[in-house]
Image (cartoon, rainbow, N blue to C red; front, side):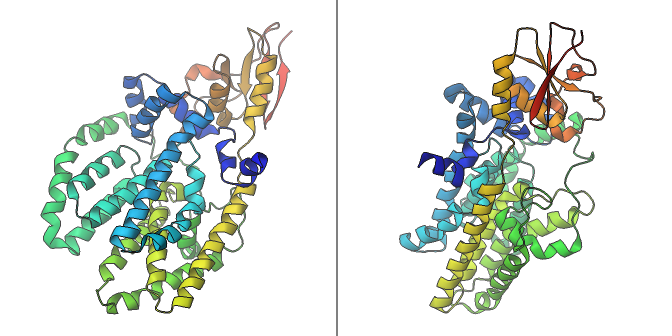
Length: 434
């Protein structure tokens, strides 16, 4: 039974080996406070997640389970806010709200990052909280959430900008009430902006994301809902079908939104902007600078989930509503199951455990792929780790170069009795010069 849970359910992600970005999170969080702030200013992400992880590690340790559990807490925080939106704003009964929460529980993008030691569950949490406090008109709390969100991921500025435009043009009579607490708090964000500008993070440099093609614009709803990444871990042939279903569902809600007893066009704009317009904006930017990646837009996956629920409720026929609920659920279950079976992280934990069992005092570890440098530091904390036969200049910034010292490059083997464990493609050899 336990083997089933940890191999055939999302819990498989909880016990998988750390990959580069997760090891990077740990290494960043263990830095002294001033160094942490300085280093994140030179990198592409702000410091709040790493600061929270640092505190979390102090109480719960540095195991994979401990580090990933912080994201799991924020995942359930996201579930909590979505329930409140369904129950309080959409005015669904408790039973109906819990039924629709199934979409969140089986959302493959949300539950994958619920078990990863990165900031993406926090991004989803802040996205849900921003919507909740906006529609509740609790603008002071909204401003605080927005302030914290911008210290978590810079992409949250997109949802903030959209909300500013929404309030200004749609509910403009409340704009002063909305903007004042934001401006008061964002005075305190300016110093961080200045620090980042002077630090010159490498965000303008070459990135690994593949530029989009125009035909992919059709797939935006399916990509945002599922988290599909092209040319990576899974070839999913039904993406076109899912997108057509979602486009049809979402667009079909326009007419009834205009003619509902209470005009719901404002809700359509607010949800549609969150779920579709923001990803579309990033998609178009990506023809110039490729940054369109589902995990960066995970807050829009929350919006897409709510937009789908809202659109289903706009359908007049009860049986069609139930059928659509079952169809969307089936889509998410099939995709989630495929993700569990195929989206596997390299089992580096076993490899490093094997290396650890053979290491002697003066031995070193060489990695031939810079992607393995940070995992090696995590799993072999008391060992000297080097990147083998590469120059520092050729290392791309997005592999966590900000935490790779220049002296971590090696081009020659140690002299026996010292040995080098050379890691390549998940296996290793032991070499030295005689």
